[in-house]
Amino acid sequence: MTEVLDSMSQISTLASTKLRYEVAMPDPTSHLFEITLHCSLGTDDTLDLKLPVWTPGSYLVREYAKHLQDFSAVDAQGARLPWQKISKNHWQIQTSGVQTVTIHYRIFAHELTVRTNHLDASHGYFNSGAMFFYVPGREQDAIAITIHPPDPSWHITTALDPVPNQPSTFLAANFDTLVDSPFEIGTHQVYDFEALGKPHQLAIWGAGNYDVDQIIADTKKIIEVEANLFGGLPYDRYFFLLHVSAKGYGGLEHHNCCSLLYSRFGFRKPDSYNRFMGLVAHEFFHLWNVKRLRPQALHPFDYDQENYTDALWFCEGVTSFYDLILPYRAGIYDAKFYLKLLSESITRLQSIPGRHTQSLTESSFDTWIKLYRPHANSRNCQVSYYLKGEIVSLLLDLQIRQQHHNQRSLDDVMLQLWQTYGQKDLGYTRAQLLDVIETIAELDLTAFWQSYLDGTVELPYEEFLNPFGLEVVAEFGEHPLPYHGLTLSSQSGKTLIKFVDIASPAQTAGLQPGDELLAWDGFRIQADQLEQRLQDYQSGDSVSITLFHDDQLTTHRLTLGEPQPKSYTVKPIAHPTDQQKINFHQWLGIELAELT
Ligand SMILES: [Zn+2]
Image 1 (spheres, rainbow, N blue to C red):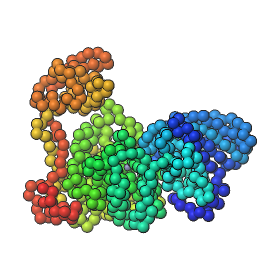
Image 2 (image 1 turned 120 degrees about the vertical axis):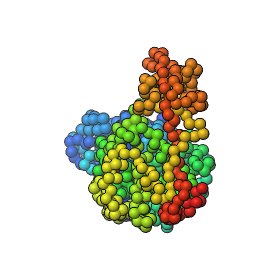
Image 3 (image 1 turned 45 degrees about the vertical axis):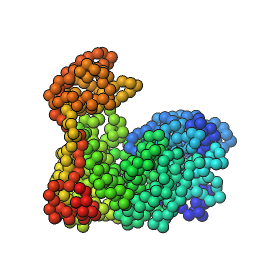
Image 4 (image 1 turned 45 degrees about the horizontal axis):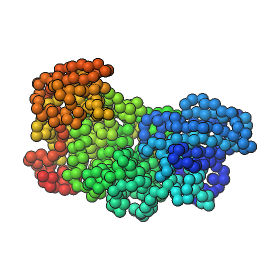
């Protein structure tokens, strides 16, 4: 994709730009962006405008048009032009041959996530896909954007290049580039730094307990480790946009920038800070994996509806695998912490009954209706392609390492894919993706794909970790607690049943999601008290459960089951062989004995 235009071509392109947006925010506390589109596309009878229904990187139809209001259109003389809506996100203006049309509308922006818009007295942040129309058939036209901040102290940060001598004006080569370029407007701090000879910026909005120098130093390490994996940086400049809020979390990748949202006081505790650097590593890794190296089915983006692909396990799962291992390789945390994160991932996956029901490829394909739309049965019928994809990627990495005595790994797969498809801006098919993996591995992985990608066979951790001197140990805690199968939540002082595990004692007893739990063997019970109460029981014990179901008081008998593992821990095996020790050392660069 063309991302950077030189100054001269920018000026000439600006003069010939037929789509020019102006974004004003005269009253930030109203949370309304005021948008003007100057469109001089020609003399057709009608002008069609569509607002995207989703943003690439976040695979859910979000219906951005729900935030649009006060739409109007006028000709060059200011005469109103009639218009009508054709569908939820499609506006059609009767232009009757006029050359230039000016459109006004407002967008309500009061949702602070990485993929939505937020405007208040402190800043304006927007994702262009949730702000700007595209003209069907003219998606490749250049688009100019001029920002009118409400106050001279507000400045603008975006990945788009500014147009020289045009204040606060930026140019996007096409609509995809525009959608890929969020804007931050306000009094945020911007820190410049260099990594591998290229300019980078860290822009931060919000107060928190972060240490900017530390973040920049560690971000540089991440940049270097990831550039090393892919053989260099495929951009001229890059910026990290960090929003900090009370308890936000999220990230969204773009070609030359990423948006990060993190808890404002989450930077001091090492554990939480390490997870933040994992988020940085994740979004930065995406600039290759998914932004430039992508499934064929994801491009061109269909802003009108879903782009279906069964490869999100690779786009997100592999990226999640790397967001754990790369901060370790960068020296941000040690191998013990890496294995702790791995253990937590395995614990999460093994606690979800849905891993027996939904495969990784199904999870990828159905993300539009499932992953982002959890419901009462989600735990029983779904598995996250982030989570299982991360662990399957680990198994693939270990398989390749074992086959090639650590001389090859998933790194070689990524580099090969990058050189064959990413650098050439070619999307890959499923067959091409799996072929590269098998070629690097020099293995027929048909059974692996059938079992772990397209099937729901339980992941055999031992088989893959054992050659590296590790095992996965199920931990039951000091006092193993009998199993019930309930997930509870607290809401306005009420204890509600959120999930009931399939085939669990709770389901057998007739307990249902949404029921209000009142008493456990005759005594009031709160969500956070259940674990403590369970310590007085054993498997086989019968408990009287009193609850409100649809406002009706009912009592049920629940027979507690055998204790389930509380967690899983990746640990060194008791008596590793020399070969296992060597394999481990070549994989993680330290002695196996250092873990104990
Ligand atoms: Zn991701």
